[in-house]
Image (cartoon, rainbow, N blue to C red; front, side, top):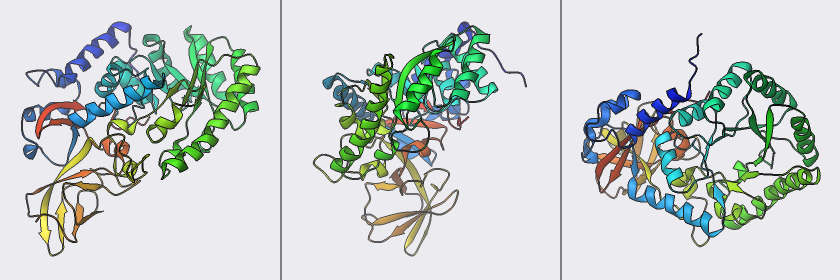
Length: 411
């Protein structure tokens, strides 16, 4: 199969098209969205009230979203730290650019496919946090590096390093590689400081790879309930990351980047000497699962507001239950059940692909066919990946329509 090769001019042209989407399509709402179908179908809802939206609809409360951007920026600035937001939360070059405008160092991408979307959207400093393995994917990576030399990848094996180096050498390019260190998640990453040193020593012998530092992501600590428990769990993970850093420095390697943490531990990670940046993703949206982990002085995690929600419509009503059009294809339930906004005395249960069941225990308002019910997703990342567009809402009115450009890009 023929794969298109992108020149700098191609990327700039694509970047310009994506920029047009940022204004949601400016005044007309038609031409700019042709780049990202089927977003153009929703341009008619600009300036409409949310009650007119086709449900299920993924909405962002813009006032809360903007406060979340500022809160993270202020927290990092106060600690003289940097943050590289994780784009897997929003899968959108449009929102990624808003994070950069708010002071972010660059962006993270979970997969190569996400990185391709971000780079084509004009974001050039991207760290791909999952190893890029295999000839075809590495060729795609090098096509990105041709346009975005600041792109970075992680690796935890000499075999992957050798693959990357051979392809980069053939392409006459240099790739920046961070060593992935396992700090307790037991997913990817080298397990010991000695293994980190051996891997970087191997990397140093390769002609087309540049050592960029350490990734030490402790995702298992993000949902730990209780800030004191998170702090304790994080200290153990930080110790492993810093041990790898120390070993590499003793072996003669400078550590430009030590990238750790996420939303749940952002205020813990920023205070650790030696950490250069954090990788928060969910902070812009939040979700019901994150809300329950608790904060410094509250049972709920309130540092960031819940800006993301899914608007649904009641399509059927029976004794003791109401059925909405928001099922598994609109609201993910992999981490937690969605939580209703502005409505108490009910319980949400998934009712299959297309239906959500609202159990009416002691509802604070009557629900009838045609009524709207808004839910905070249980998990923002996986819910976003179910939708084509975000509706940016302010004071109940649709102000923006932004495509989820990397929806489904798990490759």
